[in-house]
Length: 84
Image 1 (cartoon, rainbow, N blue to C red):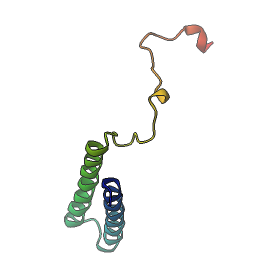
Image 2: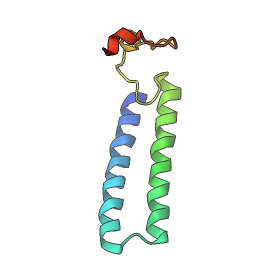
Image 3: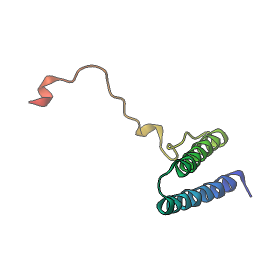
Image 4: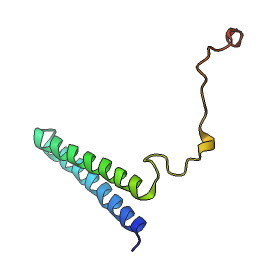
């Protein structure tokens, strides 16, 4: 199994964990213990995103986005006639 396959498998498992914690939260309420579990799952997702970034070189949330899609916004004020 390739590294990419392993990362994808972990992402799927983590997504299922997040869903399971959500169902559990609905049953037991929003006490301190379930908030800690929710926080831990969020940290796992962040850690996995960082791991994926370090192994693939793609920043989280930027997969498939070309640099040509970036638009530079100038700091200079807009021409006032644009608003009339």
